[in-house]
Length: 87
Image (cartoon, rainbow, N blue to C red; front, side, top):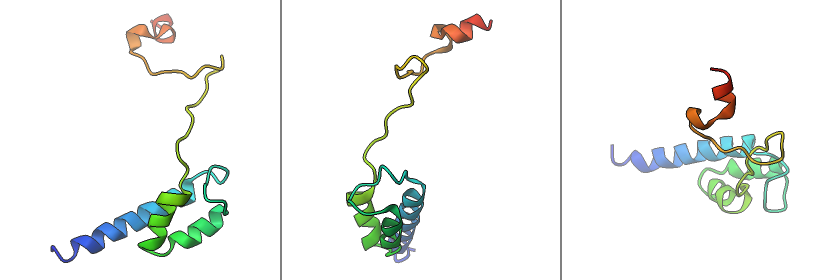
């Protein structure tokens, strides 16, 4: 079992990296190359996944904006005016 664990870790990281690359926004991908090329690079099990996470993966995403232009923070139901109006 202990001999299988490193291969299992590499397999899970590889699959996660490929799915993350496929689902990322093409405009947010870093590295100066296209998302398609990053996906082809991520096909390489260990090296491609490391390159994707270090150089290609988008850094952070901005939170969604509300209708008033400010970001909406999560709040408790008793502090939420929309929830209280519905009571």
